[in-house]
Image 1 (cartoon, rainbow, N blue to C red):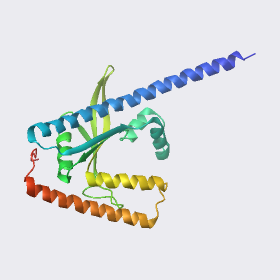
Image 2: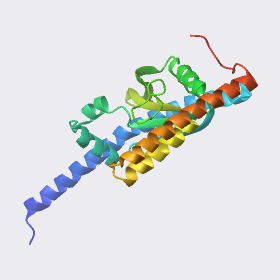
Image 3: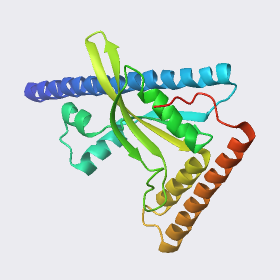
Image 4: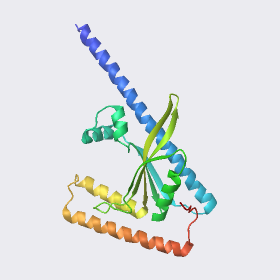
Length: 225
């Protein structure tokens, strides 16, 4: 015969877990909405360039919201308190969007056009194009905050936006696969090859941009700051 106290404990535990699950889903929902806002802004810029300037500076766009497992792993790895306020304050890349551009100038131009919008607040900028990481990684990382209006009111949601060229994106994808294969313990000779490949990609970006300027001249959509 079951103990009524045990049954009650299981019921309370289940209810608590469901409440936590619902709160976690709502927490991530805010980031999905924030990501959708930024995606819409990028899409509008892309379409306007195509329609008005007959030039598309964006090759492709990808986005994601961290999975619950990935978020929990990062919280543990960084030693962050496991409450939503602490996570919201300490982790700014829960929602992320990657904008792959044709040329380096396009990456900076799109970043400027996005961050000058009235409802966008810039929280942080890491320019790994101007100052690449030691391993050769290059990308422009911008943490923006965008307002999301829910039934309960306004929520300001951080979204990480990465701007990079095709060459930078190809190199970063290869580097990620290599680090995954070797569980981050990459042999020194492969690290050297990766750095050489990054230098080659950077040289290609520079050469292609120079050729593009010679063919087209100054590109449309440039606004003096």
